[in-house]
Image 1 (cartoon, chains in turn green, orange):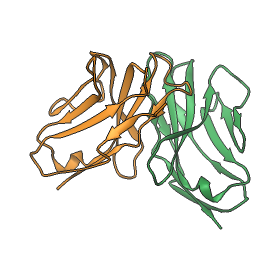
Image 2: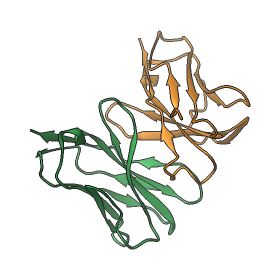
Image 3: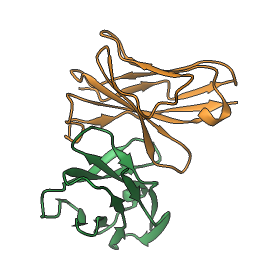
Length: 114
Length: 117
């Protein structure tokens, strides 16, 4: 069974700093996708970034980038120049190519401090 | 183009009552997914539906829970005889087709928070 583990329940950083959120996963699949979702207090689930497992190049979306280590089954999210609006729960998620079930980690609550 | 619409946003039910949660997918999307989020937890998959078909219900509790996505109208998640443990946020997501949930066209609704008192 696939599992997703986020070992940091909560983190706080100063505005403008860089922060890295950790995520590890377990799967026997070779083809899959990884995601980071942001859930602000409004509870909306917002896709931040995604990574295809077959791509070696790490995905980047503006201030958000990932460090994808396939052999280590690690998928960390780096937020550069953090902003107050980045305060939210962040969920790491996994999906294999056989079905559309997204498996979520338990989340990391990120506080950006002014 | 409106996103996924879920209603109600908040629903309070007494133990033993029925809860009906509605999800209107993005216009043109024919696939709907329901997820449940317990407090301080991630989302857990419940069911995946296509118009008039249940594709995968492996995450649905065996009793009291059912889902449908009729040819016309929203998808409905129905919980009969609710218990306190059903209190959670229920999210719906839609996509235009199978294996495309990962596309940027896949949206989550804002969820329905069910409270059982």
